[in-house]
Each structure stands twice: as structure tokens, then as C-alpha cells.
Length: 193
Length: 193
DNA sequence: GGTAAGACTTGAACTAGGTTAAGATTTTAA
DNA sequence: TTAAAATCTTAACCTAGTTCAAGTCTTACC
Image 1 (cartoon, each protein chain N blue to C red):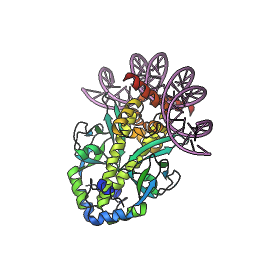
Image 2: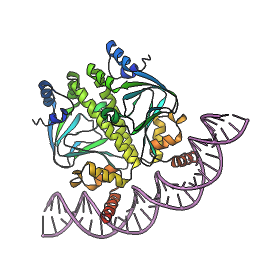
Image 3: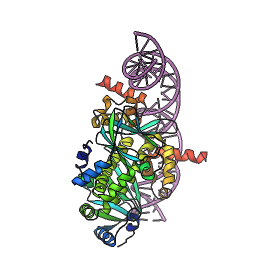
Image 4: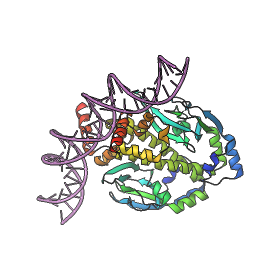
């Protein structure tokens, strides 16, 4: 199996050979074609998902059937529904491949075993979640303090490669606006330079 | 010293007497009067902050001098600027007492020592951050999918005691609207029942 | 106990962004 | 290769929320 994921982890913590081997042994590799689902809303989440190659998005479908994209996950990211994974209640999110992708599934029970046996992984996930929290706080400030146009600019700076293959309607959704309004912004940009 | 904080922690993990004692020994208690600062923006954050009694708020002041409240923290909550604490770059947030409060400071270096010596605290903070992440994801969805009025209702349901002593302008800021518009919502509510 | 400062409200004019519906362009699939 | 489906754009009209300015109500302080 591809041990590429280890390079992401050893950026934050140091692993022994035993820890590496055990970790790799509990991961389930899976391939997804563009458009396929890693997780559907309404179902219980049994796996934490690591993206090896490709790109996934996680979105929430509201009662009026609008999709709200909450995250794009590319190579090296963890994704999925933490709430459903923790509580084993049905997920409110859908996670879906935006491009052909290879993912690694970390089953909940094996993850618990991992954390129990090798506390270094508690540390690793503590650091992961801590960083992710900072990112989410920033997004929250962005959402309230900046205009849609500023958010779009920041998005482009932060994820320069994404716009090539992510449909604009999902980018609009991620930015919290309608596709029509994103069109307006793009048009205005072109004429202004 | 008040060992009340331990009850919050042992809700998530089990501590030995030794772990409890060491943890308590590294905390610095501090009293704040209403309006006093626990942390000012522009300064480096040296402590993670635990609220024992009272209530603090953390806000971001944007370039146009608008305050954006990102969190209210009451008894049992951790607060402060995780980004500045981690990177030791100047904080972009201010944390301030909304009522007379007692807080406990966990200095960065002692926190690192704690995590090194007693991995059970890695587990505790991993769980904390994981839960907090779920909360932040929900807030993000709320911000985009709901109207200001719905957000206000949800806020009141979630923090029923806060509205008694938190000035409305900070609640408006937390909801991402102007105080004027919050007034309008409250007025409309009164006439409609 | 009066006054100054901050908090809250009101209303009128304005704007960022949404809605609806149609048309243009691209992608998919048979 | 072409028809169908999905994506993207355009435009007219609409609305949630802002801005500004004035007025009321509280709180704090000399």
C-alpha cells in the first residue's frame, strides 16, 4: 500500500516503525471516480477519510434543497463528518469526489484502537484539529467581515489550482453566494482588469 | 486553589491524582473586573485561558475599526487566540471580560510540558478541539444558510442566560449584523408576538 | 443630583446580493 | 455526431441588511 500519507503525519509528530506499520495496516484504500460518493447524508459515518490524490467536497443540503459546500479536500487532507463519526448519528453532510480520487478510510473502531495503543496519534490529531479550528475561525470572520468579491479573491489566492476543475456553482456555494452573483463578480472583474 | 476545572476535564478523560495535581499546579488564577482585558490584539498570546466564573468575549477588530465578536466564553470554556498561542505571532483578537470573572491561565510552555508528561491531556485537548470544530462548522452553515432573524432565535435558544447581561451590540456583532438591524428584528418580534 | 457618555431605537435612503427566467455554452453519452 | 443534460451568463426586478442621522433611555461619575 501507498505509504505517502505518512509524510503528512511525520510533519507533525515522530513515529516509530511499529507505529507506522500499525497505522498503515488499519487503513482501507478506496478509489472514487468523479461524481462518486464517499459518504451520503442520512447515513451514519463509520470512517474518517484521508485524501491521497484527487479532490473531494463536503456539503450540507438544507431543507430547501440548496447545497452548501463547507469544505474542499485535496491531497493530504482529512475530511468527512466528525459529528456523525463521534456520535454515530446520521450524517447531515455528503462527501463526494470532484475528480477521480484515491482515498484512505480510517474506520472509527480502528481509530479508537490506534489512539488507545499509540498516544502519539492523540497528539497528531490534537494538532490537526487545533489547526483546523484556526482555519474555521478565520473563515467565520471572512464570512461576516468581507464582501463576496473579497472572499472570491481570497479563495483564488488560497486555492489557485482548484478553480481549474471545480464547477463554479460549487465555488459560489463555498463562498456563500449564488452562481448568478458569482457570474456578476467575474464579469465586473474582467471589465475592470 | 479551586479545583472546579477538574470536573470539566474528567467528563472526557480519567485522571490520576498525580495528573490532577500537576495540572492544577501549573495554572495561574486571575480575577478580571467587567470590561478588563485578558488579551489585547497586537500582543503575543502566552496563555490558553479557561473561564472559571463570569463571561468573556473574544473579538476581531477589522481595518475599518468594526469589532467582530467571534466567541462568548462562560464557565467551563477555553478561550483565547490559538493561532497566536501556537505561532507566537501577534494576536489579531482581543479577549475581554463582559462580567466580573475568574479565569485560569495555562502558560504555553507549561502546557507543552503537560502534554509531554501526561499524554492523557493530548487526548483531552484532542476531544476539546474536535468538538469545537463541529461547533464551528455548524456556525458556518448557520451564517450562510439562515437569515439574521433565525440566527438570533437560535442564539437565544443556545445561550438563554447571555442576553441578560451582554450588551445587544455585541450580540449583533456575534450574529454578523448591525445593532440597528437587531433592533428592527426585536421590534418586529414584539409586534408579531 | 446633574450631566456626560454609552446603549438602544427609529426612520429614510441606499446597496449587496437574491430570485426568476431566458439564453448561450460546454459536457456527456448514445 | 448529435441530442440531451448540465453549467454558466445576462438582465430585470426584488429584499435583507447597511448607513447615516437624529432622538430616547441608562448608566456612571463628579
